[in-house]
Length: 217
Image 1: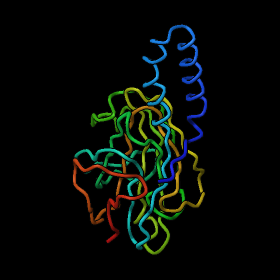
Image 2: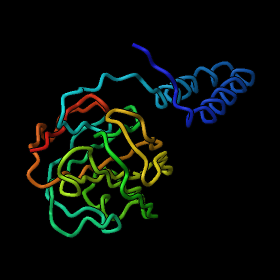
Image 3: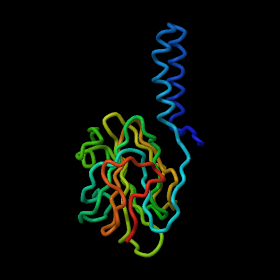
Image 4: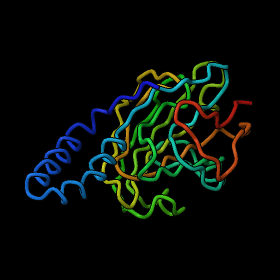
């Protein structure tokens, strides 16, 4: 498997390695004590290649993690998608999961909005409303126009304090391509178009760029 390190991790890894080396110079036992933490930091920013399904009409998972209970909810108001309820799939990423996020569909970015907020545990339902977030409205290519728009929301968690989104409004995106990362434990919400066929269940483990969440009806 081809695994690289995401560039957001370079400075963190350099810092952890430097501290670990100094610890070895100060006291060997301390260096060995800190080594697992340094190795964890390297592993946290791993960025493995993924094989994205190419079948038309699929919506692919944007994050590694565990699927929380599926509920009906309104997308973030700042995206202008209305107040109607739609299926919300939430993926919780713990500190051992890959944290690189990937596009769920091929299409265009219609809107982006960053909101400051709190840092509740990302597994709590209230995190979707109150936590710091980056909201993304996507319009898939093909027929249907805005009726097939979906939202992807990067949410900071209890430990995560840095959301990175590399997208720009109007930009074209491809299913499975990387678009960002959230540092140190977080959550990603996906708001699906009404009538979408959901192909997963709560409690499942997901892989960004590979797990099929749903299919357009």
